[in-house]
Image 1: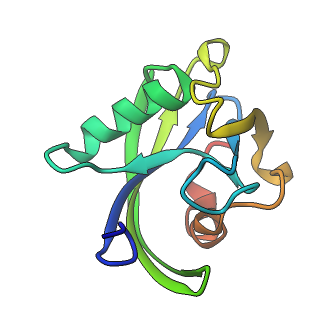
Image 2 (image 1 turned 90 degrees about the horizontal axis):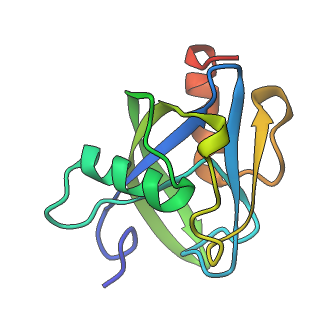
Length: 144
């Protein structure tokens, strides 16, 4: 059975920023579940027995080798997509996370071809489909 296809997938998504309007992003490799070559802010699925908050902290450590200065829950988002001819449904819990820029590293080079910092008015393309849906809803709440 596949998360998001055979049953609703639950994920934590986050936007890590340095407090100065810069956001770290990763370019998804072919080793990621889907949307290879797209730019993502970060996240990961919630495993059985883990809380959403524990998943957030685990994914921050795994993906970017960081512990947050602070974080806040922003909203949840139902994400409906069609990938490779299959309908998918994910529920994403979205967080805004402040981090120390100098501590950020690519903790998953097997999954991320590249990481980079970007401003919201100059995001790399193509953008992961989740963020195409979510950013317009939260853009006014984000540090610029």
